[in-house]
Length: 180
Image (cartoon, rainbow, N blue to C red; front, side):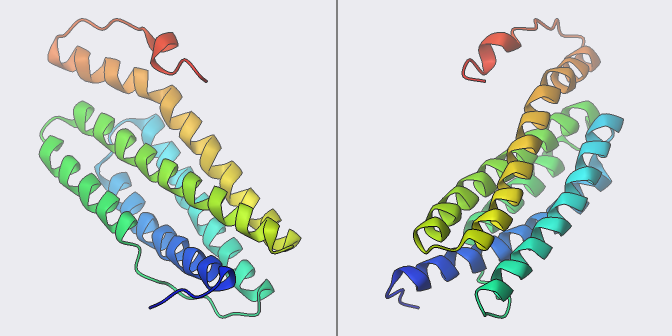
């Protein structure tokens, strides 16, 4: 399908993230079934609720723009979900390591969503769509917060995995993300 103008490009991106959120929701439910760390399980449950809220926000965006919600297959999301399923399957025999893999996969999801929402917000701003910007900004803020939460929990998950393996753990997290 050819995209002929900026409005069509916006709706293409909107339909793409709408599909991505729905794909990620199913992926999160699968992650929850495989997670063993109680904190990770809680984070995933919280993000499932946020994703449902974000899908509702996207429904509102479509409505404000006078359109019916529409999903356009998001190949990026499909790839991220498939990759996450693969690594869960490959680490399933080591629950602590699987938790690390789940957290890493979840953070990849967050960064994809963050990039998508930032682009849509810029487009909505140039289109003069303040209400749309506000709805998309709510989603972006949740995605950024979830990413920070995942990244802050990763050292503990790694420590758990390394302890289960009998490996020594050195906490150098202050250098892992120097820009945060």
